[in-house]
Amino acid sequence: MGGVTDKVDDSKLGVESIAKYYDYKCESYERKYNIGYYTHIHTGLYDPEDFPFLYRRDVDFKTLGLERIKYLLFVGQENLTRYACKNFSVGNFQKVLDVGCGHGGTCIYLAQNYSIMVVGITVSRKQVSQTTRFVRTAGLKHWIDVRLMNARECDFADAEFDGVIAIDSFCHIGDFEKLFSVLSRIMRPSGRLVICDYFIDKTSSSFKERFDSYWVADVSTLRQLLDAACEGFIIKSVKELTSDQIPFWKLSIAYTELLPSTKKIEGNQREQQRLMGSLCYHKDLLQAFLNGDMYYYNLVLEKSV
Image 1: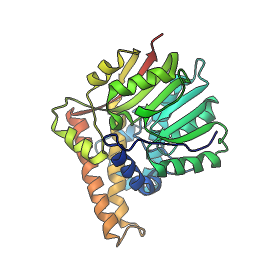
Image 2 (image 1 turned 45 degrees about the vertical axis):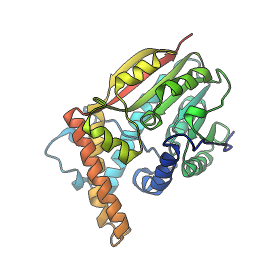
Image 3 (image 1 turned 120 degrees about the horizontal axis):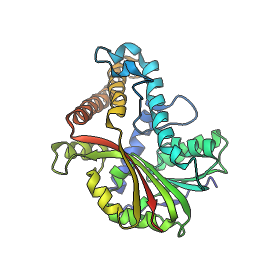
């Protein structure tokens, strides 16, 4: 394991654009989210009982400082990873596919904590390179295989995987009917599919265009995903996590507001312009959550027998 396979069909609508976006964002994601030998690039969760100060309205998160904010962002991401991966803690899960593996945080977490063989796929060449380095640093090259691959076109063997996990990736992939057909084929009967992702309130929402254009996505309603899944999967649980991930975006906004004053960014006009665009979007996204235009859900599905 540990090899890299090229299998991306750039003729598919959006795949090349998504790859370019994540190649471009690779360095800034590492700067913002990395505090160790692996990186998460998805949202985070915070239990109000564990982090009550993050839910107080009178707290200016910028007073926490960059390093503490960065640590809290990572903690939230680890919380979400732990929350999603616990679905593979009980049962016969020997091999799991991570769809949209990002920089490898979920792959490494599964391998380290549950001794599961993991295949991570992404359409970003830089993410493949970054994840491969992290996997080697963690000493997990015999447990994790990283591949350059479009999830809708993956050519794994029938029933090859006991489970599939996808965190913040379905919103990019779209074409759920095709995607679920592929996943159904490569999963064993009663295999488990775990999804954590963003959903729009309705397809006519004014924020959908904003979300899609910034993140090169095709965000759907929850109903659209559930309708597409019903052919080959049984819905085991659906849980809304919107409120528990809102602090992540407040922290992200504070981080982005503080970053231009650092020595690495100060005087770099191009980077400051990029940060301004990121800040405006994160503020819009936070408001969309607060207004009920956007939601965040965890879904657990089982492959039909």
